[in-house]
Length: 175
Image (cartoon, rainbow, N blue to C red; front, side, top):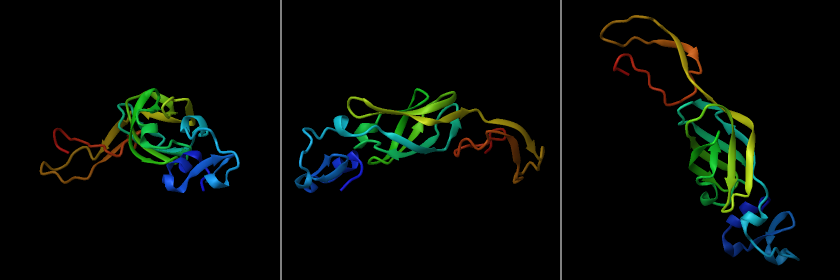
């Protein structure tokens, strides 16, 4: 019925899914059902398998998609419990056990993504890969001049320029 406890628990109660050994089963197929169905007691430790992007701006705002297993039973399990480098990552989207999308707060340097799940927070994981907070560094602009009427296509050169998908470039007060 379910290979992860949080998925089993998320089923409609009419399916009577319970955790039996290491698999979700209908309660009638379980010879010794657990004494509790508490996710904090029975769910395995969360596992972060991947996240993207791997970097974002120092001031925060990066939209991070985290994929994994046992990533909670409900939005309530993860809300206010996802952190990047100690800063809260506000949850925007959630799929039971497998996906969290959040917006990172401000940070600095390389940092692990941290999850503290459930009501007790005893189910936790830090990502093995690091998220990097970086500062975009524009170095030069080409061409250096154009007609007053505008319309000139410009190219900006530098490092960490692709760190934010919501970048706006202004020339004077004009986008």
